Image (cartoon, rainbow, N blue to C red; front, side, top):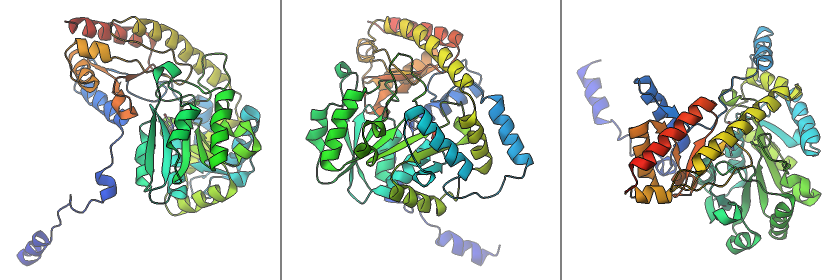
Length: 411
Ligand SMILES: Cc1ncc(COP(=O)(O)O)c(C=O)c1O
């Protein structure tokens, strides 16, 4: 390159920070993914780290699903697909919704997305105008508020209380509704709390949504990971009127140990799904073709592998919950679903002289090499999230280290 050209480039070099959009400058990166990345980095450096930050099953994707993907590749199913997903998969999802949830959806009311996360992202992009408000009961999954903001909307957080099992009450909901309210997110079973809404609770929330014409985003990604006799209920099941306001979000990530395949779906009113599909046509084009065939095999299979995984998670919950809840300064509600404990550790942190629970979490990682996620990212700064998607031996060892850490810091 001649000096003249080089100098010209240097002179015209833009300040890369200045060139970032306001949108991304205020974006908070996912704390759960950050802690997983840090745990992996420490492990790679040779540290004996136990990573309980991760939000994914530790099982491998079942073989029959992997085989279906291999067959799809062998058969040349490696091209673009319809933006909203292959028709066979949409049909299988409609069948799943009928069998599992007693919900009737036609295939033009379903879109296959690149993970449930992308389904939510595309949905917010599709329904939100600037300043539209989305009600998010907290503790919430870390991505909800950020995705709402990315779409120009305003997250309105309702702080729920432990005494009410971290569930939003009708009174709390009524109190925050304005003429800008567009939607509410209901995540049951919940990440991070593992709590579930029953039919009566959904009816009361639904009634308010109907009165004010508020859309309901029902994130049901943990529907198959429930460890009590309670049944998962979708808001869309409560009545036809509520179904017309609800967008169901779900996918294969958690149920079939398929987090890396990136397949989710949204089911809801035709107009919204059609607009989401147009959005996909200009953003992703389509979810990965091979992964769609794998998801098809998952939905068309009998549910043996799901039942087996569920049993293992249930045993781990019993084990880990008993070990954690008895540590001094830690209190914990017993979750009903998902694969997380969400204990309150404020007393342990304060007794240990830590200014915040975030500091307590950092010290736990530094001293005992246990990686967990601070509750602040979930809107609950006194809590921490511990994933029990790990072997029983690792969970026992993690609980031992956490207890030792608390005892070493109780002045
Ligand atoms: C509550 C909740 N919704 C959605 C998702 C996204 O799942 P997916 O892997 O399908 O994008 C997650 C993943 O952690 C989650 O916890």
